[in-house]
Image (tube, rainbow, N blue to C red; front, top):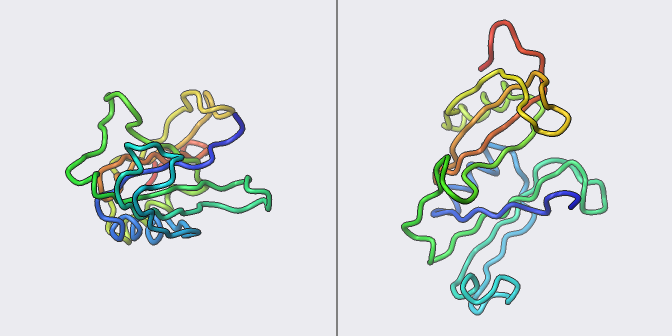
Length: 164
């Protein structure tokens, strides 16, 4: 494997989630489409059986070849998702997603300005994230509008006065 190509998150209210990912986190919408049933067989019959709106967002730059310092996130709303809830820490499946960022205090301020309060912000020692293992880092956790937990990590020297 080289890089992740994208992360897909099902949401209950696409407009509310767009306000979070696009406006509060600063991601850029690069595609907004509605898939009518039967959806592309790429997903298989169980996933492609209902009408689904999907928005692709980009976070970071573009190296011109489809890779580089960026992340693609697909958020989608489907009739079949009604009533579902995200996983919690410790459950089987993906229960949170982590991202590297350059400035957690600035991101925390941006999130708070948009009405989203971080769950926690902690200075710690890296726990094995590649080259950051055993290095000072800062981690911030926040929930998206549906309760999906997002983790933001920053490589830093541990501040004497803490953060955020």
